[in-house]
Image (cartoon, rainbow, N blue to C red; front, side, top):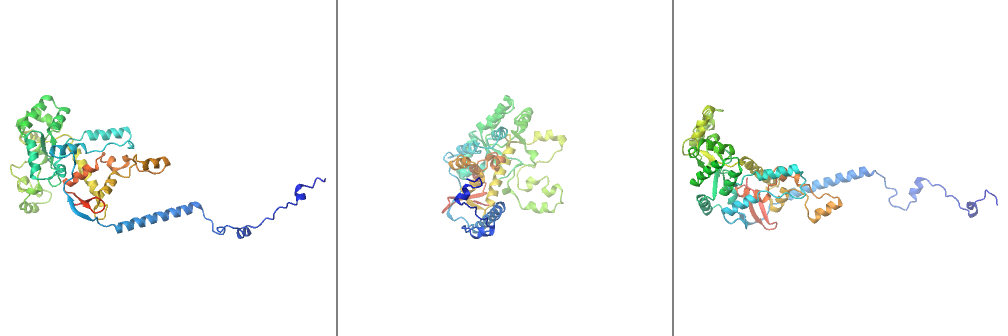
Length: 407
């Protein structure tokens, strides 16, 4: 057999003729053969942008379609709590429910966790009077009960000088006498000073101011440095209530020259605003010691300033969340979700998402609740705002409890 003869010649296998690209597309059986080809990246970016535009349109439609909640006609003036049936139990419940427990997956390192825990531990064991009224009705019966507890030496009322007023609900705070004595024992005050101070408080169970003559000067200095006494002259005057103001003083103040002391009431501002007693005159720094010894001393507790700042920040944040709604109202459960944030939890759905590598929520450390408010509890802030008259709770016909801002 000749060497040039191969199996291709014997079986007559021929190579098919090469067809042009146009003819291949023409005779293709695929219906998408003639469709223009585009890059996947540009097509994907275009689809993502279209999706975002659709979502924005949906959000705008939801905002326009948002309607007011349909109330059932029942408004809650107090919040019923099983563990708060009287004034003492209400104070204890408020102290224990102020902060939330740090979650297991908090997203905070050990330094931040210790900072949060130290901040929570250093908060004074005080409760605003408005918070107690949110758990127990603000009636004459409640006031008589508070007065009876004060006379028995179980409860102490402290007037906050220089901060807050009766309108905002931060002008008066309550503290159990046992908690106050514990704070005294944990401080760096000498034991004999603590004993003398407690004896003075027992002799004057309902007093919010004491005379410096009731204690030796060295005791007064030690208690003032520790934060248990505050000179009432340093705040200008005692904590004034707007309910005792007089319209007669407005004419005199309006006629005073701008920038002078008379423009803010002058030295007799206490009397002009309807106060009774002797006005506290300003003294020079050379006579500070004489003024300190001559003025009344207001009772206080250490770290009352950070407590009031945290309280004000929590109130403002709750009202800010309500302000995002069109009518400054919404379901209580929805506001709770906004307060806690879209945090990562340990429920089955979040665990399944983490296993699949999907987004299951932000870490608690990234939310305002833990970043700025140190874990302030949502229910605690709602009770505080309800007692202060900043919000209103009402029952709805479909979504449970509703919450509405009143300011």
